[in-house]
Image (cartoon, rainbow, N blue to C red; front, side, top):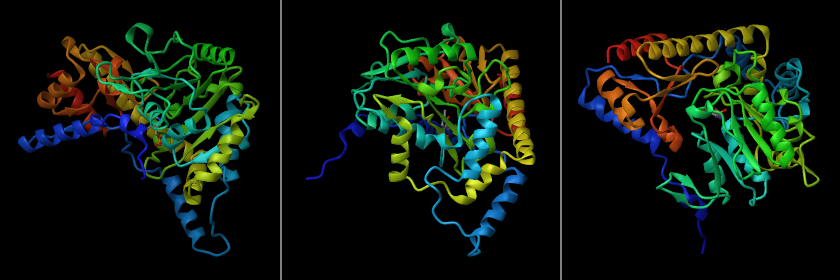
Length: 404
Ligand SMILES: Cc1ncc(COP(=O)(O)O)c(C=O)c1O
């Protein structure tokens, strides 16, 4: 008799966004005249930049002619895209990464979720708390964790690294040395960033202990401070201990188009086996490539015109982030993040829980955000707002918060 994968049954339901949706629907049904502003979304709202649309059209037309039609993409992705990524994202920043160390995919979520497959099931994992849930859940599904404990809101056999006000929301080395270390900077949900010096300490730690860092840099393009690394490969020694994930989703509004990539340096070798070869094998077996037209659109992001237009969009979102940061600070809130990331992490006032503050904000100001406790127990009493709304909504939301 066939059996289900029992590891999936360890996962508690994902209540965060469904509970938010239900509460908002109920409120809106009871108060149809009220305009609810949604600042909880982690999705972009600006349309795809004109240069990218132009290239998309050209690529679609190419598909309609026998001479330019494209079928399956090369396993690792088209060279025209990998070459430009290697040059502009890495070599121009002084990072030694070659085009053949880049694997094009349809986004960072799949890669972050799938990467654990090339590691032994015996490996221990360490994650930040609060955390982007994909890192933990994908390891639960693979049987790399114990049961979920509702009392602690944690899985057994996972090393959680609390990121709190006391440590500046940057994880400290855990007591038990992990095999795999998930780091995400700029961070979702806290919007905080790590300095190059601190990241270098993590790289040294990983090299010393034989650990691998899985570095999610999906929000890299929102960085503006000079001492904040855009890539883990800016740190010395990262080629022997780190894998990096990138995404076009927030950088260029590709959440619906889907494009990302993973970097695995050839120097990353465990027990005599290069991880690059294992991921290439997995890619070749289980994945058939991001569409040609989307890879063309991705390459357009690196043209002067494309880059300029994308930078304007990022500046727009970061303008929203500034309005939220200043609005909240002015209203007396404790505010973090939002300077090199599109997320603002605020402390709920009067020791309210994250969900109590959610209800208060929804009922009194008709604003929707995301309760911090939904990202892990260390997120309790915190709340996430995003800079992805319209300017009008962002300004109005801050006005409403001021009048609370
Ligand atoms: C930290 C982090 N990594 C990865 C992703 C997913 O990116 P993609 O759209 O490329 O799958 C997200 C999306 O919200 C994210 O917040």
